[in-house]
Image (tube, rainbow, N blue to C red; front, side, top):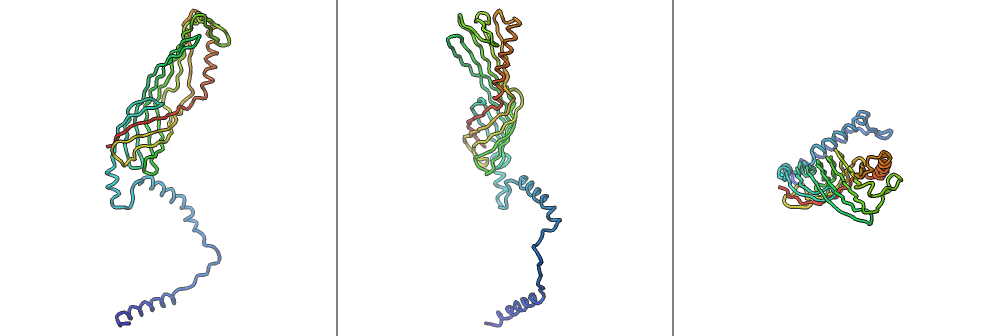
Length: 271
């Protein structure tokens, strides 16, 4: 071994000897315990860490992360159709984990049905203004949604009796000639209501054309029905009492329909 290599080695050996000589063995009489102060601070530290994680979602140690974040397309326009109606939707992208939708869907649909006693005409009217926040937990296509919907959804049903037909209203039989036209107005939902759902859409960081599919529920109050008649007996007190009984029976059956299902399919373009 040469002189130049031997001297550093000697220094290292002496250094080890000094460390060994100055070290004093520590005797543990039990298990190590976390200091009380640290135990008390631990929940606060964890909470601050979680808040920091949420606040800095999408920010990573890579030098190019900031550039990638700034290059995310911020806006998208689209159209959707489904059980809440059809209409336009605008999407804003905050980062690759969070997007927000503002949309409006509507529908007016008429349908006629006839049986041996009555001809029915029904009209479904939907109006829904939506403000939804979407969380993409893996920064991909899957998202979980929550928000609010300003609803005005209803069904109008008109029954026109045929000749010699009869109605049973409130336990009493009436002829079609007595009742005339029977109308039912059902308010499915009206006012602001919370929304929860999930779905799949184009990744927030991807631009261009894409599809989206949403499944969710609008949490509404129970639908409410009102019945009225146009025949000569319509103003009779006993008939009105029986009509209110029939109306109450219908509303009891509608109490189970507090949740309006949402199934929407759409097309969007992000730029």
